[in-house]
Length: 300
Ligand code: PSU
Ligand code: MN
Image (cartoon, rainbow, N blue to C red; front, side):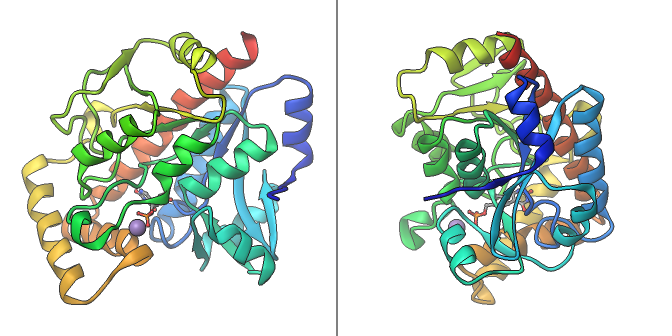
């Protein structure tokens, strides 16, 4: 069974009813953002939580041990080379004593749920890939959102996915999708995918009310917070870059877990680094929203 080692700070926060927000480590590793922006992302996300009186709980595998909450002196370890872990990979990382395993959304919500943390903030979730009818590529993130009782805050799913099918999947598997003060499903670098979000919420209390009344105890809730207004990228530029990156992907035979890091890297190159500040801004914004929700949850 999944038994994370919970840091003293996170353990004490949970025990005394103080708010905690889990964070993934893929976004902070070289798989998510190039150095030194990965360190900046970690700094900004943890700072915005602490400023709100919330304890950050970074998830990772270090020396073959599943961790929930890292000490500051351990942050350096996830900034370097790491192996990407979906939920299923956690068992392998432990059995084979991986040095540094970086958690995706699926691994993070599994660890958060096992350790008693109810709220999790990320950048963008994985989803149904374009062409999935041929490749079968559907992120394990979606099943994990449906299988663990955690509120996930994201800026939508990555722009290069099939967002309409991603929303269909979430509907089929019973995950409530709540637009944070917004009517549209965000597309990560942009505020709207053009697809309406099933329900809109105005406040952390609204989110907590949905979480408290869901019919399946094991299922999570997805909150989609659009990237802040001034930070979004130009949709037409993005469309061209994504089309290019995906055809490169196919040409170079990049498949499976390697697709996401590859395409994100190509987007960063092609947008002359403008995608990176956008990525940092949305990650920080999601942490801020998650802090509000975690606070409302413990005050309930
Ligand atoms: N979005 C980003 N950067 C990332 C990811 C998402 O902007 O690094 C990561 C997240 O950890 C997410 C994972 O859970 O990609 C999904 O990967 P896949 O599509 O292989 O399931
Ligand atoms: Mn995949």
